[in-house]
Image 1 (tube, one colour):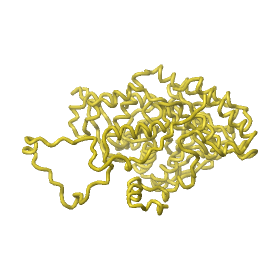
Image 2 (cartoon, one colour):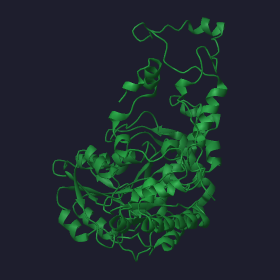
Image 3 (cartoon, one colour):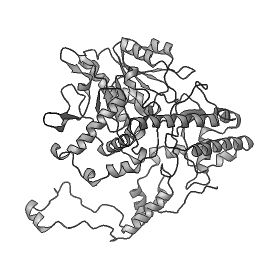
Image 4 (tube, helix red, strand yellow):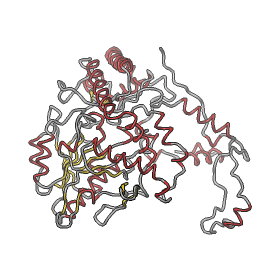
Length: 523
């Protein structure tokens, strides 16, 4: 089958329509309401002096424009999106229906708690389920996404040492070199110095490097398990012991939870804090389909016995509680030792309801089967591609992977100058979504591939076959991969220009410049 992506010469929306064309009329305020609330008068200092520069289109023009754009796009409903470390799994539509029910969509964050008891019950149950899945005691649903969860975790570590009166010496967070890029960023934002430790050749943390890094200044360690290499950290119990010896906290990055969920729990491994990505592990949309949600759970260890301060007292945002006497759910707002509010109101409720529906639909056995299928898919794909000329499998090539695998195109790049980027373009040219490339940084010419639990055996086989075909073409005609992609809506772009903000021009400015005949001067 020959792949050809839809390609329309679609103008920008500002070039469509005509002055005075309307797609939706806002109803006039009824007279009795006007009498009741009075006329709305916008203060002069904030009132517009000119109409907004918005396109004027009919409904049909708007619908056709965005349908055309959607046909030139690729998403999880079109096929696999095997972005390593991102877990782009298929999103169940039943969860969409429930989370987008008008009875949920039109709730207001300031309305009386007595009017949202059903919603609070669902969120209360979700807190309990998530805490149980990661082996913790208390969970907050407040953080808005994965990196937000990381910041919550690092700020909680900071508050822990502050409450204990030792923040002046607890200045360092240890992070493996295979970590997500947001880990060191989150630690730095919380005011810590980042100490990086290397991975051993087998993919585990280098324990000699860890012991050399641990000191009285160690505030904690951030670890993803399984790691971004797709490998389970075999020294995790020993790592926890080393960090706890110096009164540090162990933080779990839950990005890869779907590689162990139902089989192993971070809390049982010695982790004190664990964040969870609802938009990765529990079926809510990821990326542009968000927003995400990044709940954080903790082991409720004692921080200060004299004041009876526990780790859960440090968590941010409101937590749903249940009053047995009154038989009602309510929000417990941050107390005096909490790190406070990291966003407005409760949290991102819609994706949380996606996660609630996902867990409710699967049940405990289904959660385990998700992990089983994700791990089976990864290792089957690894078996298909392993040994193919042009690709290498660094870091413990003899070990089984969990949820993802990181191949390297370094042999191909070294021998015929066909890089990981060229491989990615070759996949696009055949109608496949490209994997994550050039990450983690410790793998040269990295191709980070994760098929998740929702992909079929046939999809894995087709993907592996195309990667083998790309390698064959590369060794026969190394110039050919440099011309890819040819069959997509857009060809290969200038990556340097595309990634530089100086080259990005707002759509409305393009429209104005075109109207004024000045587009040729735009750089």
